[in-house]
Length: 381
Ligand code: SF4
Ligand code: SF4
Image (tube, rainbow, N blue to C red; front, side, top):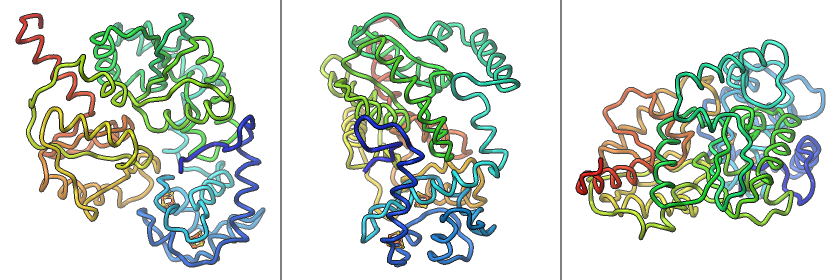
């Protein structure tokens, strides 16, 4: 099940949606604790009953629960284990909304320049940031903060990740290699709203989604591409709510679809995949990453105990044990393969910051290396 704003066609009111489902969940919960047993983040001493009570109306939220709420990454690991089909992630999300004015600085900082129509100092900082990026990243400047007017078969939507230069350049190069007709929609003002949603800013998330829908409509694409699992979910939601019929694919899914047009060959050794909590191992995106790894190297799957489906990005460094968990995870990775291939751009951006001797790459890099090898053979590089 995906992590969505609203799940009803034609309706865009996340605040009401969360309020209604959570009130239903509070009645259904049998206090079995399985959700908390599956939850990977640090938790202090509190019972499910206390957690459920804190969610209700104006009840105060004890500090030990507040801490947990800020540790929660919204990874959804608590969802499949619930015997009565409750989405505990939504329940915690409602607490994030309740505590939104008490968020730590690391949360607030993350949203400082994200979103359309910012006001005052935020708007000023956003403008400075954009101007700086346009000057320092000239080759991508034409794609920053623009609404493409050209109708195109494919819309590449990097959103805020337009500033994640390496992956964007790789995508553009590979789309060009396929002679694909595409437009690009990227920028902090074209944010998909998921960062707001995952912090409990429901109205802001709905607003971003609505604006993004308008921008996508301008291009009228048949396919929307993204490498970020959160953007993917937002666009999937747009498709559902506004009854759109475009297809939404991760960039690697698209490349795998046209793999006959791309160079292939074993250019790598052992590779293992980092699955995102939203692009899971068994999902079409997880499958596409595995096909890619097998095309260019030897895929080694991690055992269930070694797997991590979370890069811990979405608690914004609040959980003091993020670092040690990642260290344990990467030690397990190293036993299997020297290279960890990330399937989601958010995971890649987060994991690549870690000091480790495991090589961490975006899955698109494998395709790009194959194009490099081909061009080098042909003497065109
Ligand atoms: S969504 Fe939050 S509560 Fe659920 S498992 Fe992930 S971190 Fe824990
Ligand atoms: S697993 Fe489901 S029923 Fe059990 S405590 Fe968690 S939310 Fe309640």
